[in-house]
Image 1 (tube, rainbow, N blue to C red):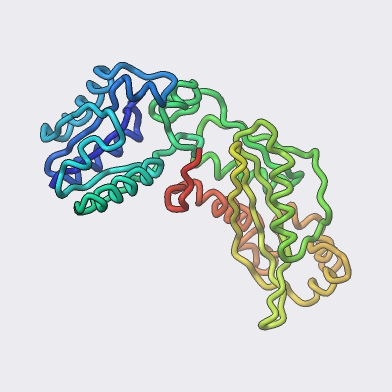
Image 2: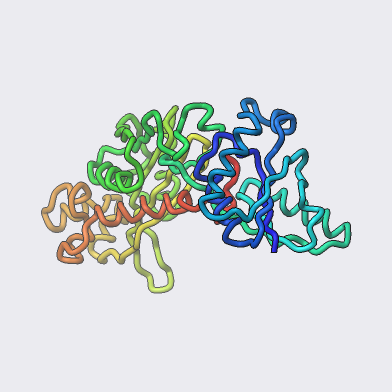
Length: 324
């Protein structure tokens, strides 16, 4: 079976490599369409010459196989309306084009192509690698950031700062995490959906010209089924494209004596201080530390909420995020 793949292949990078490798893996013969200089220049501001782009593709494909052909691409269809039965490999950005091609094939009485959709290849900053970003000197062809990734968290709590810093260290190298303390919030003890609202407000306060801004808030949620209150941590992450992703930690039931004080207007930390004479527990092990005999600490829940807020960003194609 044929496998088709097409593109400009400008400033050859890891995203191109993934598409070509998947094409090799799914077809006996790979037909590669590369946009001509004339066609590419209609849509691109800066394009490498066709022969150079073709050479990059050839060199990569020869690592796996000689069973491929390269054709100049002068329109969006290329060979797609000529073959009878084939796969077509696309990125999240070009998936709609493949659907359009299949509709055109259907109108012609042809069998639709089998669409093989590959995910984005992410740069170090968790935004997709693209030729445009390489041209703009944001990243290298392998996705490393040339300038520091700027991230801010609006908090006065070192636990939140430390949890985010440790999460980022596992994903990025060249980043600068800034603690923003110039913010205000409506309440020290949010309930229900106000927790999500305040976490997002924290994130919005620090965005400015940064790549990401993060807000983490803990709140009390009521479960009317068994008439108890739960503590959850909630994280909101907003990026430079104004896209917001969110995540929550595991929730746990709050003891009745603490919740009674919280209902009277005292936040959880001060309730624990009043009941157990433990000061600033929210900046240390948290109530979860007392409940679990310190096998779990508030840091663990904050980290969990942060991780879950970033999960969407690790596979944006699964969430139909394509507009970068």
